[in-house]
Image (tube, rainbow, N blue to C red):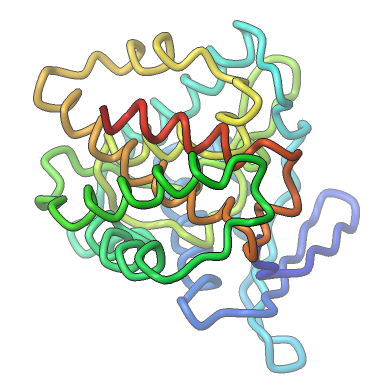
Length: 264
């Protein structure tokens, strides 16, 4: 996981100082918090101040209650998360809102190169399985294409459950440095494919997807977006990447099997 910021908490105030900001992380976060404060108050921290400290951008915001969702959500927690996502996706998308960080077309290009490179898989429990998934991903990415969004939504741009705070009744969303415009199905795929939930089977994926009443065309787009993000997580879980050492042995093989099922 790339460390992008340091956080200081003083009472009800959170100061987020960025240690990397080459992709406009601070600007994205501030703009996202401002938009949410106008159109969905209480869903995210309230923006308070933007400043520079020791040459680094700082975003100051309110502290929101709750703790990150865990590895095994109960029905009430998942329902609350769905409610939060529905509130987010109902926010009007500004005409001039840039794409979220890592939209599908750029992710496809980046992944095609990264996965096609040579990888030493000897540290894997089942190198042959992982290699089969890697090769299948490369072949699929070579033919994949992604059209402009048909259902634009405001996006947090990160499906990590750590960004969803649960206070026992409602969920709120934090960490908006990848905020931007996106496709509804890409954002749903980001949630259900994220390693924070998929590797632990934390979500009832069919129930979550059903809550958004997707039509047939959207279901097809969702599958392609899930395949893309499953390729991303395979790459992140390969030896030499942080996800390989951070997760339990067998996680890479689990991801490889999952990806092959999606590509079947």
